[in-house]
Length: 262
Ligand code: C8R
Image 1: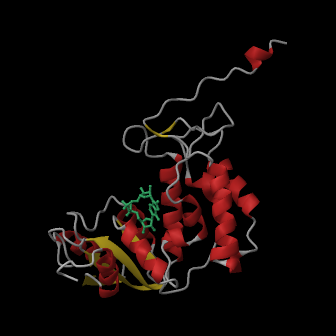
Image 2: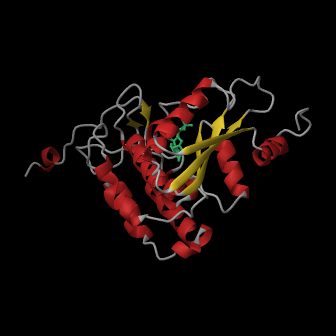
């Protein structure tokens, strides 16, 4: 039997984006155990082995430009987790600040403070239809290769669930130091806003934060924030907004002692 020929596989495709994070599987498993044993021991019954396998099964042996929500269905079922009403925090172009805040306000949750977001934050992953291995060399770039890649579809899918599950008064940290403070093309603007359930979300409050030292460009009265207000109005969700919400401003000041605005 010509074993060499039977074992030949076409080489994995060269994409424009960086490849799968080295040791992805071990990182996912480790983060799953850290989260379910230490961060939130009330989730200690979750089966991290099963969750890790469902994660990789979602993209291995598949075309990384044809990823679907369906691919992640089992993973989503295994990682369901309740966030209490009034405790959901969305963010857009303000990742560091939002996460600094929930690190102090332990009762509030960004998506990265839930199991699946915690596991996947900052990682990249993709496979190849002709191989059972991960592609550590390259993965599709959202712009240059395809938008239906494994991690973009993943964030769309988990962000959708995170928004669907939200209840009570929900908050979003927006970046007032960029021109599109509310960006209709962002995950928050495209996915989360449209998947809030008006029958259980009473109000969305935006906190428009300005970077310390930057010339302040956008505020609650800017046109992009007004677009958000109009979208929510049509969806029967009340909107409110605060510029430079005090508690988060204090965190910015902790990092910039001596600034005149502090
Ligand atoms: N959310 C989306 N994307 C996320 C994410 C997350 O929680 N966590 C990570 N690491 N990413 P942005 P946005 C990655 O433009 O588009 C949820 C993804 O690769 O600053 O409005 C979360 O609930 C993604 O492309 O923000 C939050 O409320 C960028 O980081 C919004 O969606 C997102 O960068 C934020 O998404």
